[in-house]
Length: 435
Image (cartoon, rainbow, N blue to C red; front, side, top):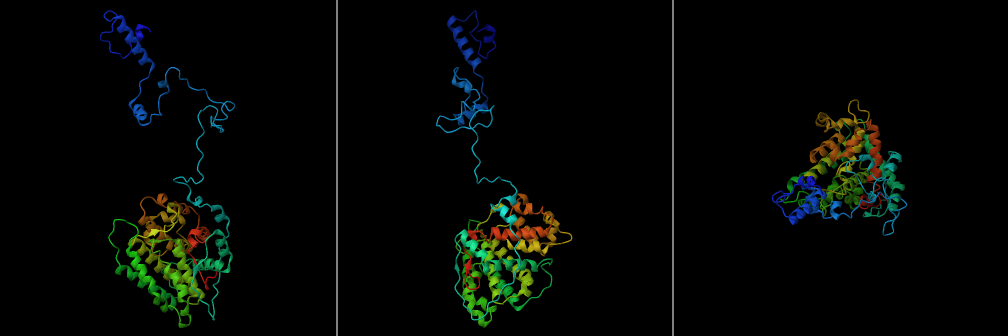
């Protein structure tokens, strides 16, 4: 090695000049200089990575015998030592191909409308149509309701039956009854409608009488079980609605009612419980307690009272969302208000689906329109931007008109609620909703 190369190294020069050092010292200095010249210095970050991960080493550390392998070819590297085929991403790179993307992979922020697994089926499905509810007549054969659904085959059986089509048609009829109307608009209120509203008002007072208990956990306040116990002991509430000749139906319709307000054991609430409330109203329609003339009041009076009661229960006892889709769902708890709300706004002159991003509109009209009320509640209980915590609602705001939103909501409700086994396995069947 030339003397100039040695002198350019960082080796301390004390006692190593050509005149004063011995031959042995000079030889040792040359060996140290050669080693330092052939080994590049490592930065502090690289040293730290190597300490944390011993496998991340500089190839030069393996000694002079190390040589970078040439890029593999398909002929030379068609199989790895274990015998399995190896695919390389391109001819210029080397290394194994990246692992396959899992089939259940869901990006953090993807188009929300594409998230349901049967989105294409929802798009191609026909829009459900309204149907008249047939009224039962004497002699009656009321029964204790029971569960029947446990598989997709049972779901198909239900939707192909007269009961399934009639129930979905009842929901569509309620949606059409509120079209173009605000919640405060005057409508016919029968004694039956007023009786239901009175019952829900009594249950609302129970919340004040049963305050939540102090606990470290935010969700699932056990005081909700006391509220549920009082509900299950309140069969006499049905006497306010039913004429003496049909009070024998109470053992059949009361389970639908009690299942409409959440589960006492799990302290949760979801769209399945909401569907039970719609089923209870359907049973009342089958009994002739409510008629088509009541439908607008059923939505603008009864369902408004029910939604307000559920909001209080959810925020007072912090009910867990039952089977929530998380950010990929419309709402952690409800679906029907979005159907009724989008129907209200069909052909509205000024408010469009994108108007939900205008805070002034939400503040001014959330008391008059279900859809705006739901968006306001979601923004109240969830932190951050709407596109982050509720991307489904955010994406739907790009739909050009409320008519498309409403028809899409009806199809989605059928597919995402009434055709889901985990939800419908708790649905009840008897003489009014036959299997």
